[in-house]
Every structure is written in structure tokens, then in C-alpha cells.
Image 1 (cartoon, helix red, strand yellow):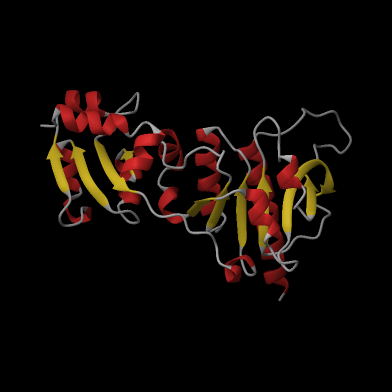
Image 2 (spheres, rainbow, N blue to C red):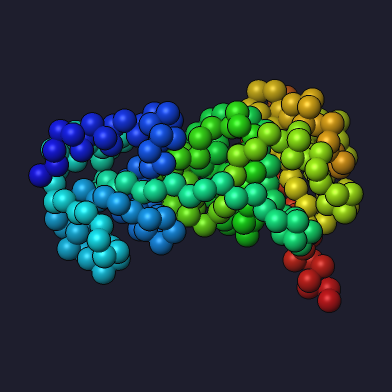
Amino acid sequence: MISKQQIKTIHSLRLKKYRDQSELFVGEGPKVVAELLQSFECIYIAALQSWLDANQTAIPAGVRCETILAEELAKASLLEAPQQVIAIFRKLPDTLPTAGALQSELCLALDTVQDPGNLGTILRLARWFGINHVICSPTTADVYSPKVVQATMGALGKVNVAYTPLPQYLASMSDEIPIYGTFLDGTNIYDAPLTSHGIIVMGNEGNGISPETASHITRRLYIPPYPMGSPAIESLNVGVATAITCAEFRRRTLSIEHCK
């Protein structure tokens, strides 16, 4: 049985200020919790008995576990449709990618991406395309918010996310690290030379990349509509644009490797 105080604690973690104060966050559902258990320290689990029976070997020693009924789960859950298990995890410290990583890997940078669903989708894309680091501006949505955690479908534990002021961070990069960004006046991404390392900046849902951040971008890209020259909507959803951009970078990498 889950106590009223424990329900209150879970509900408080809906708010960023309490997540920041406690350094904790909530994950829910069998898939999300199973993935997060592999990467984060878990301090509490409340679940249906059926879930606990099926996942005994996956739960680390020392984690406080409670069996709850479906009606209790509904009261404690932050989701509209509760999913068998709720767990509380400890956040990881922010760690920016090293200079070595930037010289050998692709990294994503997000400039005020505010929609939790978009951020969650981008983290899933990062994992899919083998991108290990996502650098976020302080005005980007909180990666540990319940909506983002659920939208990542567990990818949060496989991608390193760090928050830092982007203009200052990009300004500190050496000339050897290309900084890409997507713009309406950029070079056609399918014609532009692309590298297998560097930083790809994606902008805000409504305003794109801010002028302060844009001033540090060295390679401006454009995703053209089809057919070329045809009328198009003003811009793509940032999650869709990220998928197209990452796919083209990886296609080039695979083509180069295939030719070797």
C-alpha cells in the first residue's frame, strides 16, 4: 500500500523546482522503467504485484519496493493512463562532451526547444542515429520532466544530456569543429559537404535558432521541399527536421565507409 506522503512526493516531482531541489525524477510504465533501471540509480518503486513478480531480477538490491493496487496506481500516477509501475530515480550530473568527442563524433545542440514531446523525440532520434551527446540551452525543456521522460521511451538513459548557455559554449569551440545549423537561407543539405563529427544545432519551434547562437554557426544548412522550388510551409517541425538532418549525416558516413 502506498502512503499519502509518498503520493505527494511523486506528484511534487511534476514540478521542475522540486526535481532540482531533490535531484530526483519519475519514470512510469514497463518499458521506460526497465530502460531507466539500466542507467540511473533507482530509490523507489511502486508497482502492481504482477510487474514485481515479472521483474524481480531487474530490480537492484536495496531499492524500496511497494506493491500497490490499480486504484492506488491511478492516484499516484502522473499519466492519464497509468502503466503498472512508477519509479523514482536520481538525476545524473550534467557532463558536457569532451574536446575529443567533438573532434570524432556528431553532437546535437538544442536552442530553446520547448515542447516536451519534441525534446523526447529528439532524444530517441539521437539514440537511433548513434549520437551520444545532446547539449541544451537553459531555455530548452527540462529533460527530466514527466512528459519528456515518457516521450523518450527510455532513450534518456542512453544519451548524455547537458545544459549550458549555447552562444558561450559554441564560441569556445576550435576552428577544427564544424558547427552546423538549419536555416531557410542555408545551403541545400543534399548538396552541402558534411562531416562525421561536429555540432548540429536545432532551433526553437517557432523562432528557429536565435541570432546569438546563429552568430557562431559556421555551416548553414537548408532542408528543401520537393520538388525543388515548389511552395512549402514556412518550416518543418523541429523533431522532423532533426530526423531528416541526422539521417542525411549518417547516410553520408555510411556511403564513405562503404567506399573504403
